[in-house]
Amino acid sequence: MSEPHVARNYAPLDVTIAEASGAWATDTDGRRYLDMLAGYSALNFGHRNPTLVKAATEQLQRATLTSRAFRSDQLEPFAAALAALCGKDLVLPMNTGAEAVETGIKVARAWGYRVKGIPADRAKIIVAEGNFHGRTTTIVGFSDDEDARADFGPFAPGFVSVPFGDADAIAAAIDDETAAVLIEPIQGEAGVIIPSDGYLRRVREITRERNVLFIADEIQSGLGRTGTTFACEREGVEPDVFLLGKALGGGIVPVSAVVANEDVLGVIEPGQHGSTFGGNPLAAAVGHAVVDMLQTGEWQERARQLGEHLAAKLDALVGHGVTGVRTVGLWAGVDIDPALGTGREITERLRARGVLVKDTHGQTIRLAPPLTIRGTEIDWAIEQLEVVLGK
Image 1: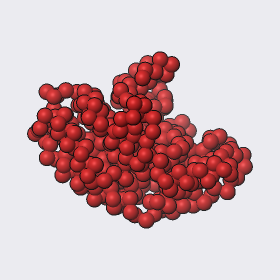
Image 2: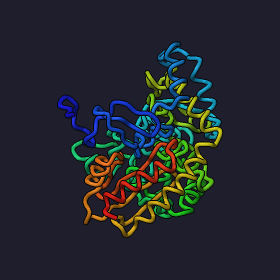
Image 3: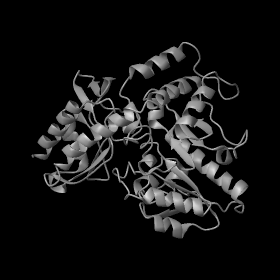
Image 4: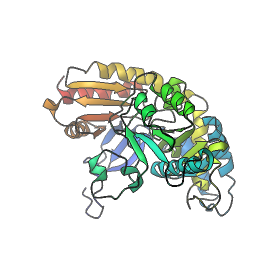
């Protein structure tokens, strides 16, 4: 099915999904596919998770939107639960991941001026090369992806880019005008790039020593994906600010949030930031249900155990059409031998065999199956990959 009236800002695979449940999707011709992408981690708990559908359905019968001009009975309970999950005081709810990042940038600058004492309009934020934080004009302005940047300037100043995984470069880039360091603990869009052990701990030490905020973009990596609630936990690190999204809405509604303590997030006063839909009752009800599911630790452990299984299967492919693999929890970047085709070509061949994944940066395919997937389903998906690779 073509889409002649849809703007061409995406190049989707040749499949048209009509229904989905758990880890499986069904197209308009009735063919089933194993979804190994899970909406870029937005569907961590699978398609139409019964617990989350129940929360949404019940709230749909009560109220869906009040705007923030009034209070709703869902927002404070959701915010309290999410703050507790993060070990923080306050939650600023938004809708999309990019909105959370933009909000985090505003909070960091306001903190820099009002708390740290940076001169007006001089605040800097250090970011990492290869980053992906969204596609607003501010965010693409500090991206090094030319497809994201070309013809969308001029861009906002105030960002300093350093190599990802190089804590010494961060230390060298900090000066008296630096308000924050904004990084993904694991770079997802770049191909599931995992920094060396100790990197996040060193970033935390540097930012604390230099009175700079550490902002962790956990929009893709957070909420169970890596085998821990947050990817930062893998090194026992707690950032000053969490940026959350995707799975927070359970694949049902867009929900994002900035989560931090009063001494940071308290710099925002009424009238200085907002969103008509941010924190709406429907979003809050679904988000609260997501947080409740994560509080048991069951999903994190499931991602850890199944992730080990996935890693073993993928590691065995290195040298057999695969040149490199990076796996953390139920999240993997697989580098395809160019002799066998591009990442896009491999994804199309997998689609033809009933497996949905997505390519990135030419030769890499990404796997991020729902945490509901079974070990036998992972085995079947890898068998299809082996066929495609000619192993």
